[in-house]
Image 1 (spheres, one colour):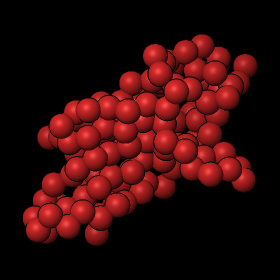
Image 2 (cartoon, one colour):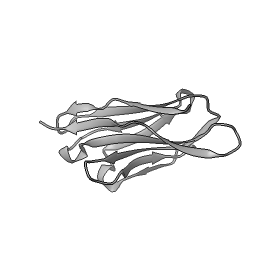
Image 3 (tube, one colour):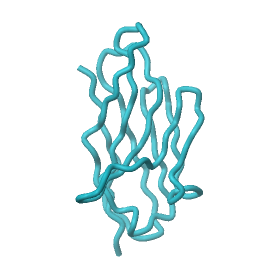
Length: 121
């Protein structure tokens, strides 16, 4: 069974920083693209940042220059460094990964359970 486990959320003051981590657990062959998304109550889940297996990155306009996504393939982990946080960054943050379990090139998307980020004074 493949699971994605996020950590690092919490309460932070405006202007502060947090670092989210997401690790893939389970027996797998390889991980392709990974990303971070966020979702507020009654809203759709939106892309925050995305990183390919080759290291190319994509960011939502609202977080460019403040957030940085990175990955450690050996640890099967993706990170989201969030700086200069604003109240509007408050949401549940979800990790997504495309995982090949068998080595046959059949990638399946998995989601983490989400971690709450609250930016408030």
